[in-house]
Each structure stands twice: as structure tokens, then as C-alpha cells.
Image (cartoon, rainbow, N blue to C red; front, top):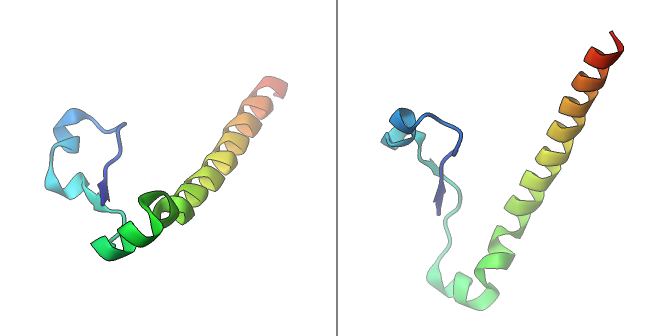
Length: 67
């Protein structure tokens, strides 16, 4: 599976350099465990990153408000 960032300008998004490898799995493994189970660690990592980024953004906004 591959991914790309959606917030890139279309000019950059359409280049091959912007496409990143997400994971590699054999078909037998996907059939046995399911795609959701294979992607679970990746989704959990993205959710943790989102929590940290939301906290940082919220903290920065609060600091700006209090200054």
C-alpha cells in the first residue's frame, strides 16, 4: 500500500517522489488476518500523532491568547 499527503499542492502531489510506501503484505496474510488488522498499528500511530499535534496546536493558541 502507498500513501501521499493530501495537503500538498497538486503540482507536487502528482509527482512520483510524493508517493510513499506504507506497508507490504502478502495476499495470504491479508486473507488470513484482514486488512484492518494489518493496518491497525499504523492507524494507532497516526492517532497518537494527531493527539500530540492537536495538543501542541492548542497549547500554541493558548500561549498566543495569554500573551
